[in-house]
Length: 97
Image (cartoon, rainbow, N blue to C red; front, side, top):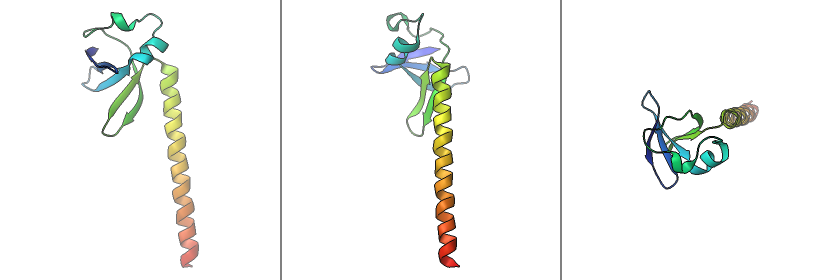
C-alpha cells in the first residue's frame, strides 16, 4: 500500500511492515494500467523487490521479470566473489607449502 510520496517515487509499505521505494520511472515504464498522477497514499499496488541495499532500504518494481533479473545478477556477483576468495585461499596455501 502506498503510504507516501517523495520527489523520487512512492513509499510503499507491505502488510508485514517493510517499507520500500517505488520510483516514478518504474511506474511509467511498467505500469500499463497505472499513472503516476493517479497514485496516492492508500492505493494498493503489487510490487516486487528489485534489491535490498544495506543502509538505503528496499527498491521496488512493478515488473516481476525485472525483479527476477536482479535476483540472478546478485547470484552471479556472489558466485564471482566466492571464486575470488577460493583463488586467493589456494594461492596462500601454495605459498606456505
